[in-house]
Image (cartoon, helix red, strand yellow):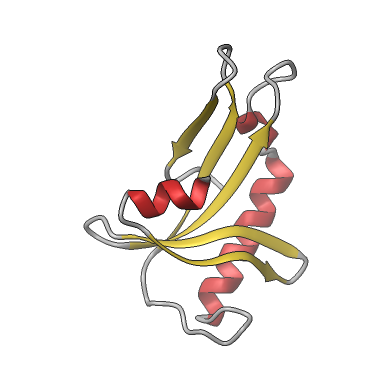
Length: 115
């Protein structure tokens, strides 16, 4: 659902479930905005809101893992399968998916989260 939404916005999803050391990056995409960016997208999903929003599951430890993995990927300049990454600035976004009070799925995109 998250990848489909990004592609509908004109983004290019270049990889899914990328392993960087012990970390896994959910999506890696190119945001075509001016200027374009290489975006590490963390996707969080909650079936219910009883215990908070999906955004609240990204704690200090997860942010540190994202920071290290994004930095390692940018430093390498390539994906684990050898494909070269475009030389673009890197940022980390969060896409949160959960069910609203009406039972419908809700998707929220947070750009440039602090990691």
